[in-house]
Length: 464
Image 1 (cartoon, helix red, strand yellow):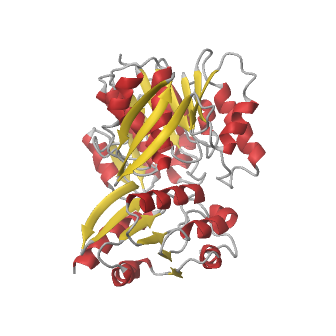
Image 2 (cartoon, rainbow, N blue to C red):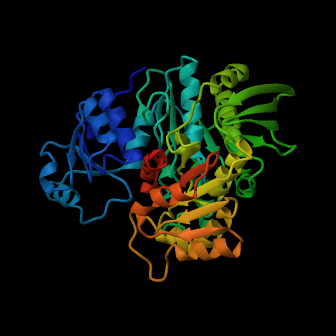
Image 3 (cartoon, rainbow, N blue to C red):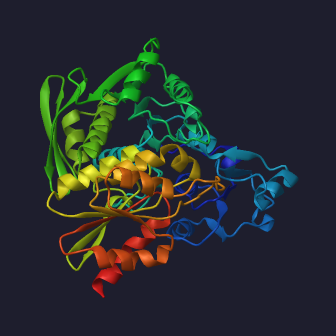
């Protein structure tokens, strides 16, 4: 099956083409035969991967980058109205298409699985993509991170299934019409766009309401927000609801998760039968993601035992507890966690994987608004580490908020009894960590910003 390209996307120009979501859509369009171009703020491995597919990638933003024959300009919610390429698009009357609309058009006519939740989306989407590929179903997929095996975040497959990470941050996941929707959890986040949990619930209700008639909602039976969501959508008569988790009432019940170093063995009960499989990432949090993927595949009619075996082929996503290397007896691992729940889950997973090791964390807060609302909880999560270094806030798309700094996190961590120090000069962190670390320790670089760059630098300092 080879879906066509909508006329508006035949010659698209992407502003911010190097982003995780944007690059995935650009790759699929290029693989389907579109003439794709775009710009990004800096060179990257993603830019090179796009060029290898025939995509024109400009570095920097300038009006001249937009070709006169562009059929549309694709943007994300992070693109500001004064971007020169966006201004030029208005002058040329070139249509502007939101990233979510472009992705929705790519999924049209296919059996779509949309993976949503405050956290865990990338891992779960990746597990599904790997398992379905392993089974020879050749799915298309668009993910917010690069798979370890294929080394990419998106591909156009010839099969009838499309697996997509569904972003709730700007309500864009409401654009999709999936056959199967996964909701891993529902928590308050993205404070610039949501003022309350009621707004979050309303948004997720709209998303679930877009499931095609006769489709399936796969949802956590354990997480309070997800349980509340089920109550709110129970009147949708055309919706099949499948719950998963440790709760005794779960349709796909997690019987046991057994740590095996940096992997886990998972046993579930499905239709009264026990099924055991291996997940190549540590911790109960990731095991539950795998069970959600299993339940979604079964909802599409794929035999559970085949899926379970295929899920064992998943080897991880970059930045999701990714081992960066080892030097001087110290392992350095990278984590994308930036919400307190994610932070706690990854820290607990590492504790379970290496209970005798000291755990040292380098944490970079992400967004001023998130730090303002959840800084206390971030600090409390860091109490799970033996010692932490906290960097300044990574602003991403936001302007500073007066009075909001990483000190909020440091103070909360100290109040929770944590050993923590603030470091404002990121360049000094490798030396600081090298001075703290001892053979047998684990170092975890954590956050959604450029803290990931510190892993190799820390390894270099440890080696010297």
